[in-house]
Length: 361
Image 1 (tube, rainbow, N blue to C red):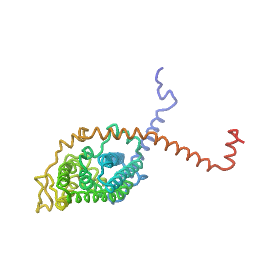
Image 2: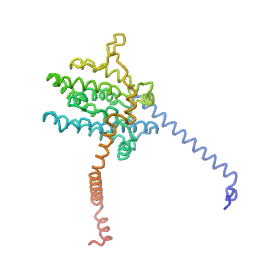
Image 3: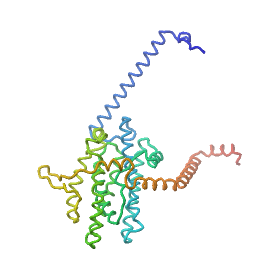
Image 4: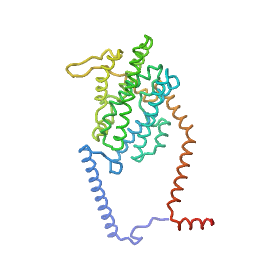
């Protein structure tokens, strides 16, 4: 079949020119409308106001938020594992109850954050699938083992302490649902840090073996805790744009410095030595100088080659598969409730007509 010339279809050259002109005017109008939306978005960010789910936002801003919030949510869920491993072995009923409450809080944090991604159009099931398939990341810190009960205390002190440094500024992030979720999360993380530090104070007033356990756990977790803030600013591909959009309020290196300055006096009070021979006060800077983390190790852990990467994902995958029946039951129940609500909303006449069609007296 030969292709017909437009003029053979009854469209004159003048009509074609008119159509092209009209399309060009529509394209120009679309460009002006897009420019107006971009300007409004920029003014909102510059005024330090919040972007809400129904507001227009650049696609890149949306993608960045989904990536960051999903990684944060995954970290909360995976982060239940290292300490959850000690619930059945906690040394007292009080410690068991504290640990249970903390792990439950982390599950709640993950749910808040997954809900925040859904306001951006993400699908929670899709995010979970990407996590268990290794296509999305979570915090590198959770790929290290908890060898003794002292690790539980050090995670509360150092890991949750680093999380607080990182997350308190997110209470002022530019995206409204994320910022509001972070307010509650940070309050609960503060409790987690206090209970971890209290556990360590108790152990440091105990036996020599307990004090040695605390020091060894501190030695293991100090450098991974510093890596929690991400790579140095010079090697961070996302920091500059996230700062410009006010998703982040501080750079990785600024947050890392804040954490070190906060933690050194706490270590002195506790009576442990932080494993960094370069750690010293710098009066000229008004901050502590400290050594460089092993960034080669950091990259290996991110690449999936850490001590517990495979174990953490396998456990998450197994939990997801074991919970399939719960999700199916919840979906069936929700569908039944929706059907009942729809039936109740019908007028008596409509309900009667529907019964008659169905042959019901």
